[in-house]
Length: 138
Image (tube, rainbow, N blue to C red; front, side, top):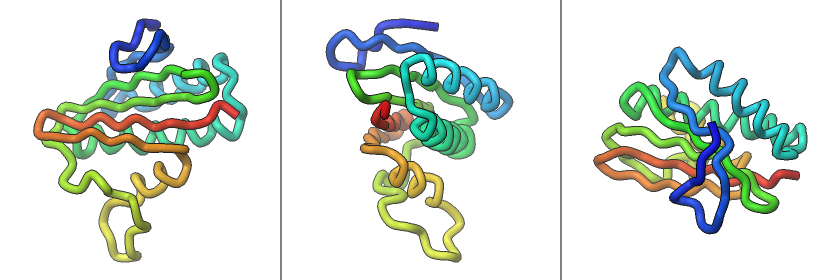
C-alpha cells in the first residue's frame, strides 16, 4: 500500500503502511524486504532494517498492546521505518541508550536498534509509542 505520509516533512511517499500483530510479523518482514530493495537499499542496510523493524515490531506486540502499525518511506538518502502502537507508553524512553547488564530482563532489543540506526526517534506517552528508525540507504 502506498500513501502520502502526513508526519513526514516534504512530499515523501510511504511505500509500506501495514498493520500487524504477532501472527503478521513474518509477512511484515517480507513486505519490508521487497520494498526496501526496490528503494535501492544496499544488502547490509536491508539486513539492518529487518533486524530493527523486527525488534521494534516485537516490542509493540509484547509491550504495546499486542499490535501495531509499520510505515516505511525514504527521504533522499535515508530510509525511515516507523512503528506505532497503542500501548501504555514506555516507562523509560531512553531504553537501550546503554547496553543492559547480563542479568537485565529487557532492553537489549532497543540497544541493538540504536546500534544499527543512524538515529532512533522515540515519541511515547499514555496513548502509545511511535519509534522512527533512520537508516542510510547505502
